[in-house]
Structures are given as structure tokens and as C-alpha cells.
Length: 198
Image (tube, rainbow, N blue to C red):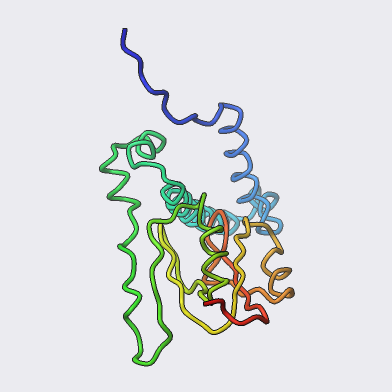
């Protein structure tokens, strides 16, 4: 008797339907008055095209970042290909991120940098906490890596799931977003008033 390893759990039919309805509702309701204007204003159909284009671009961006997040969590390309309905090779060709950056590229005299890799999303916060105590702080990140830079003070790092208003709240508390917010979370840092440990 042959056993097979179960594949990734797909969304239920109800979850698929709920997501489709939520996207449709967002497209129709976000431009104020669009839904009602479609009945008698020919220009409303052009606004609908523009709103749908924005939604498509955003869902495409979210998909790329979700795939990168799954890779950061240690998932394999064959698993992702199955979820996406394509081959492992097709998933990798479409969604693979560029190779990690060279931390030594930059201006002469710039602070020392190093790459922490491979590092999954399951372990990264513990690693960043330890590095932060020794004066290292994030300056870049990507799938399975973080680039950190040396300083003379300790740093703390925070990974924030995407939520409306979270960035403003964290920045008011002294946190700095490392780079643009990524899906499903963003990375923040702030210096501590403590010297870096040796």
C-alpha cells in the first residue's frame, strides 16, 4: 500500500467565496458613489476599470509578498506550486526573489554590515533580539535573510502584522519602519539608550 503526503490545505469553498465578495465590495464601494453611478453615468464604467486595476495590482503585490513570506517560513517551491496550480519550476520562475545583497557594497567608511542567512520567519525575531543587544540593526531584508548594520548602541526590533493605523502608532512610540511595509508584516527598529554589548 502506497501512502502519500497530504498537500497544503486549500481554502474552503466558503473562504474562497468570502474573499471574492470582499474584493468585489472593496472595488465597488471605495470610490465614493461608484456603485450607484454605474446605472446612469457612462464615466462611472471608466472609474470601475481604474478601481479594478488598482485592486488587481494590489492583489498581485500581496501574492508576491505572501509567497516570499511562505519561503521565509521554510516552505518549498513544490508546495507553493501546488497551491498556485503551477509546477515547482513555474512558481520559482515567477516568484523567486533576487539573490541576497552584498553587505559590503556601499560607501567607504560606512558602518560594518553583515547578512544573517538563512533565517526563517520562525526564528528571526530571536536572532534579531540577540544581534540587537550587540549593536546590530536591520537595514534590509528579504526571503531568508536580513542585512544588519553595526552601531555603538543596542537596538530592539519588532515585526508588526499589517493593520490599519499600526505604522502611525508605532512611529509615535519611536519605532522606525525598516523599509516599505510588506505583506503580511513590516519590520521596525528603535535604538535603546544602552551601549552595545561586546
